[in-house]
Amino acid sequence: MDWQLVPPESVYRLFATNTTRYSDARLDSLDTIIKELANAGAASSYLTRLKRTRNNASFLCGFPPEIICDIISFAKVDFGWPKLNAVARCDWYDDDEDNEEEETSRAQNSVDLGWIELTHMCSYWRELAINTPSLWTDPRDYFALPPLFSRLIRERARNLPSRLELSASSLRRLKSVGHKILLPARNVPVAELLLLSFSVGNFRFLERGYFRVGSFRSLRQLTVSVLLGADECPVLLPTVLTSNSYMTRVELHNCLPSRWDAPMFGPYLIRLSLSYTGDPEVPHLMPSTLEFSRILASATALEFFTIDGIHLQGPTYPYPPMILSSELRGMDVVNWRNASQHRDALVFLTNVVFRRPNIRMEVSLGVLDGGLIDMASSGADAKRIQSLIRSALENIYRQQFSPPRHIILGHKSFLTHDSETQQSPQRARPISMTQYMYADVPGVSSLLTFDFDLPSIADTSFLYEGAVPIPLHELRSISLNCSGAWAHLESDLWWHAMRDAEHVRDIALYFSDCAKLLPLLKTVSTDGTLAFAAFPALKILHIHLERSFITNRLRERDAVSTGAAAALQAIVRARKDHSVDSRLEALFVDNALRGWAIWSTLAIDIPVIFQGSSSYLQALWGS
Image 1 (cartoon, rainbow, N blue to C red):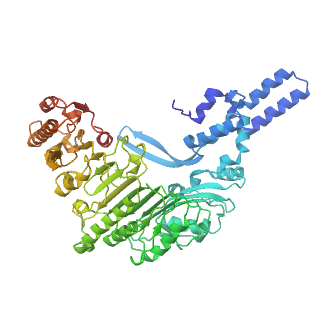
Image 2: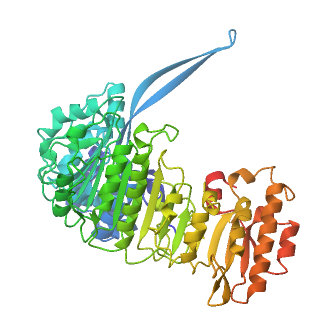
């Protein structure tokens, strides 16, 4: 059953009488009347009815305090905190003679009470809410709060450490409508601080007016996001925000600590994210390899960390070992700047030491404009990067206990994981920043996304020269139904390397690439017995359609379709005629191809099962 709260204003109509809208003065008057009637000897039953009316009693008032607090906490998520809105009121004037319209607007103030309306269900709910400080410690979007409510919230939190969210968009809105900007009170202890999408100028404003006087001794979680203009450098985090050694979460975007030996990188840190996306190179603000090695060594509880555009400084030799926490579960390394930083990121990966197997990782290297050739990445330097990619992969996979069972191949990217069960609906899209697409694959413990969209690298063929850095011997399935995957099918090196993947049962690919499967017909002699050289255990082919073919250009008898159909027929019959063990078990074909004569022909030798367009395509194009 799906639970959904009704809007707070509807609660009155459903469960309560309209006395919930009584003012405090009206309630005081009722209390006085009830007291006078009691003194006059009024019947107790009559007084009880009056008290119920005054208190707006309903069955909801009988809930235990814990349940009421849970309901209110749940309501805070759906209804939000009180907000001061600037509403533009428009008056339209219609001149019949000139047929012209004139608009006049002026800002009006309106207050959205949010979840606080729910606390006025009855006097008991209100009293309970007022006397439960923990309900008032996480105001969302402080600059959007009405000034009166910000003071009341502060009083009702009773100096408990609070979660404070400061949004630049609400600050800009206050400035645009001319409201006075009230900074958070200096005596409010802050346990979690979020600064969202601030410009450099607004960050300086907070630094001068709040950071220097705020109470941050209880700070445990810090998130700072700064939007940089052209040629702006990252801001430096005030020392007062870095001096707590009990920090558990630090996420800094375009904001760097003034010192990389700050106490906040301590033994309680669980999540660390550092990113810089500005244009200027700022090596003087970046950590050295030794400093970052010490940060990782100190963060013994670290479970997740991300570095994006963070260029570690110092010589690559001798390079300190980057020893990761035994609690680490996920790691992202992203750099979309230049070749020298790509090299250093790969050197970092080559020196990573895991103290826990089966880490989920994402590595994404590239340039912001893939069409621009990085002059520093040509010739010998390109060879160096290829060598470093191989070394990094060898180091990473060597420390993973579970070899990959599934691999997704793109043009300059791939994804592997160790689950044989495919449940994620978008598992054939191995581009950067897509781990969330695989969160629902059951049994996954080791997941690696590697994307190297570098102009100096033409394709992935260098990975299959000599010893392949990716373990292939336990693969069970291969997905080639993604952009650029055809290059693998056209590579002799790839087919030769895939001889180690002898347990693969499933291959997914685009229909237009089926003609490139002819190497599946090649056989080799092993101890006098002929066997298929590539994928001898293959049982199922999943045939998808890429977007370019979901058009009127798709024809059963054109050259591409004819070639693909002929290749499939040859493969199915060759595998069937070879032996019982080598025959294919099924073809899963996109529904858009239903009705073609080739499937009736193939159905004589193998079951053909039609299925809907891949969920990946449905999600992207609604097909």
